[in-house]
Length: 175
Image 1 (tube, rainbow, N blue to C red):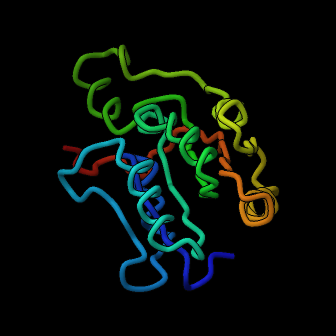
Image 2: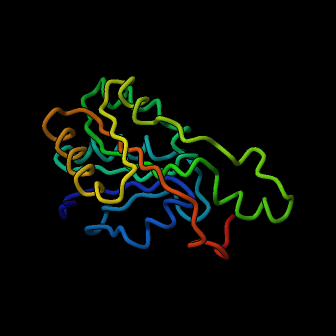
């Protein structure tokens, strides 16, 4: 469903690290991320720039739920300037990359535990179109709907993917 012209913006910790195993850039200059020691929250700005430079490309942002908070207000910018980007938020209700080390060390998830926030409703509030994805068998259908709305209606789309916590990245080095 992502064509060779798509641009992927990666902004986040654990979810983005996991997504990088399966989502591949479609070519040179088609993957934007802050780098190994980069900062969270670049997704909105990177996507804004990418869409302005390449208006005919689908721009996909892969967010973790923690990092989305840094640039979710850019949905207002995307809407006002008719920049139809598509965001996929891995919502596991936590700063999982941090809590993976914090909980064993300190025995507490304080400041790392979030809640399953209705980010799809937030996107609607900024004039975009939000989708909730909580069933495995609806993944492709929901992503296609978000892409269609983005292309046809020229509004930013956000897919709020409710995910659980897994041990997939246990043992990975987090900095």
